[in-house]
Length: 276
Length: 249
Image (cartoon, rainbow over all chains, first blue to last red; front, side, top):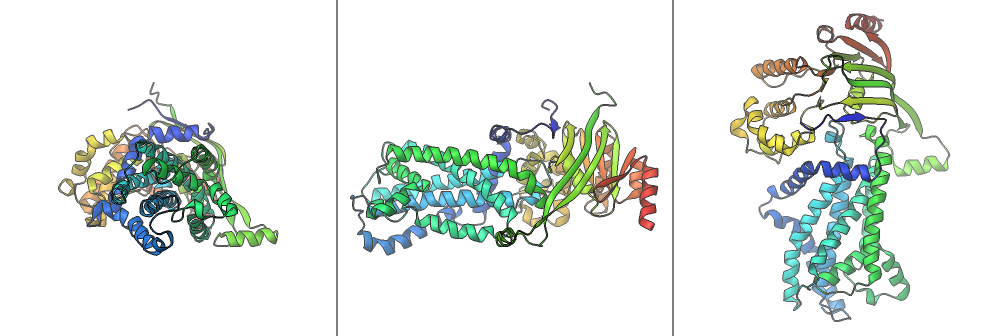
C-alpha cells in the first residue's frame, strides 16, 4: 500500500499541473483503457486491426476517383496526388476520431465517472492515444501508396512522432471542451457535426494550397489543421514544403488548445458532473 | 498511528447546488431564445444543504431519508465523485465505494480483463490486480470462465464478478448504497457475510439504506436527510423514530 491518501475538498486543484499529474499517476489505468479501446474496436471484426483503416482507405479511394481527373494525378508542384490525399485523410481521421471519441468517452461516461473517482481527463487521453495508434497502423498502407507512386519516405520521417504528439494534444484539448458542451446542451452534437464538415473542407485534404486564390489561401492558412497537414506531408513523403511558420503554428496551437482545454474542463467539470 | 478515534471522514457544512434548467431539455437553441428574451432559464437546486458529520475508524454512520432526499448524493460527495459547492470534505485512506457495482464493465472484454480494468478504476494498481485475478474469480466461483467475454455471462455471473472485485480490498472507508446481496441463494449469503465482515474489519463505514432494522443494528449514529438538509442526527433509534414520525404524518 502506498502512503495514506488524503482527499481534502478545500485543497484546490492546480489547472494543467494537477491534471497532468493525475494522468501520470494513473498511467496504469491509462494503458488498460487504451488496450480496451483497441480491443473493443477490433475484437468483433474478422479483419481485426484493418477495420479501422477501412474508413480512411475507402474515403481516399472515392476522393481519388473523383478528383483524379481534376488534378491529373500530379499536383501543380509535381507531387503525386494519391499520397497527398491519403496523408490528408489519415491525419484528419486521427483528428476527428481523437476529438469525438474523447468527448463521447467523457460526456457519456456517467456509468463510470459518477460511480468511482477517476479524473475524466484520463478517458480523453486514452481516446486520443488509441486514435494515434490507429494512425500509426495507417502509415503502413500510406508507405505502400508512397512507393507505388514512385516516392519514398523521407529521412525526416521520425518527425512524424512530433506531428502525432501535437495532434494528440490538440484533439484532446478540444475533446475536453466539447465534452462540456455535450453535457450542457443536448443539441450541440449536431452543430459539431456541421462544424466538423466545414472544417474538413477548410483544410487542404484533397486540394493543393497552390490552386487557391490569395484571399482563400490566407483563410486556409489560418486554420491550424492546415499546418499539421503540411508538416506531416513534408516530413513523411516530401509531399509538401512546410515553412517554419507552419511548424510554429502546429506546436503553438497544440500547446494552447491542450492547456486551454484542460483549464476550461477543470473549471467546468464540477458544475456539470451532477447533470450526468 | 491507528488511534481508535482517528477520523476517517470529516464533512463540515457541505452543500451541493447546481443550476437546473426550467425546461426539461437543455439545448443551445433554448438557451439562445432565453438569453434574447432575458428570461431566467435556470433555478438553483440544492441537492445537499449544510450537512456535517464525521466518521471515526471502525465506526458505522448511516444516512436515512425519503427517495430524493440526497442520500446517494452525500455518498457520492464522500466518494469524491461530486465536488461540494461549499463546505469541506476530508477523507483519509483508501475508499471502497460499493455504489452500483460493475462500473466500467465492458461486455467485449474477457472476465479477467474486466477484473483488471474495474479494480484499477477503483484505485488499485494493475500490478496489485494482476496478482488477485485468480483469487477474485475463485471467490466468485468463476475460475473456469475467466477467458470468456463478459457478454457471454449471465447477469447473475456478472454481478458476482463485480461484487468479488469490488470487495477484494481492506479499505479504510467503505461506502455502501444498500447492503447488497447478489446472485443465487448460496452467493447471496456469501456476499452478505462478506459485506458484514468488511464492515467489522475496522473500516469506517458510511451506509445508505432503507432497511431501518439494518441501520438500527449496524450503525452507531444516523443522519436523517430531508430535501438535502439534515433534519436529525444522533443515535439510530432516535433518528429513526423521528423519520418514522414524519413518514406517518
